[in-house]
Image 1 (cartoon, rainbow, N blue to C red):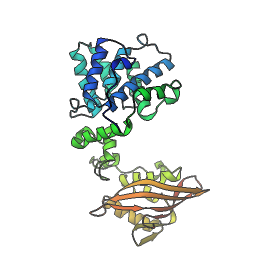
Image 2: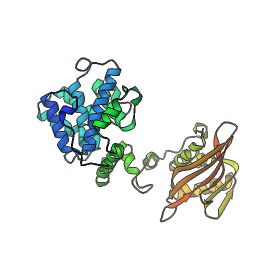
Image 3: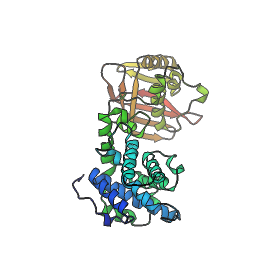
Image 4: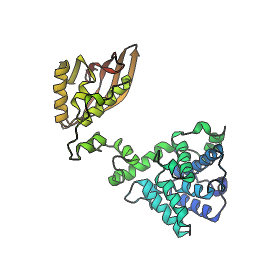
Length: 348
């Protein structure tokens, strides 16, 4: 990634040509790296394209200057000045509000910009907070994840990338969020977007997930009844449910992922057969505080049989994580769900 490219000039942007817009862009150009600045500009361009596609007219149906300010400042929480003690989206919203207030922007417009910046990673909420907030999130989502890119005018993305290069944006931005969170973990609480990113960069189990949190709540809640459990509709979902049930301490949920006479190898050389033996092994794993991370390595499906291999990291059963490559044979059941016939993390 090249990060020493000069920032684009304001006149290249096609933005509302107002003193406030120019001042805001100059401030952003001084405060954030070019890869974030380019992202912010592209987000504004894509937001405007989505607005046009929806039949919305700038400065008639929405405040175009405010849309530009919101897009350009939406990642100011990743700047040095914006790096406070809250998740970066909220730090960014507060930092932007101070900047706009110092320039005499009225409080109603500041409130809209605050929402647009604070909620730009909040699916399902931003679209309910007004046109500028919704367009800001949609433009940002298009540039990061390709949300709605099929609705952009032909050639717009290619032209925009040529003028404002991506510079490996998605990964560079993720790294910037993680750098802040590693230094200040309280900026990345488990159920937030920064928390999700941070979890991928820490040893497995170091950052709690949802089931760790409810297990530590102290209320003694137990897993739901068998009638409410989900079945694995695809072979890939078996591993997802295994991790979920293990985190929740749900022994019967784990056992439900095996045929009655399935083979399971919990440790090298320890070959178990049948529901009773597997249930006892699951009890031991849960009592030890085991946590498992599975990442799909490969899969082959032939009719009602699947051969699956996962990269597995097991923690909580010893002083060091147990890392293995699993070999799993799954079979589709009469009800359509998939379960293990053979589960051997050490066969390979």
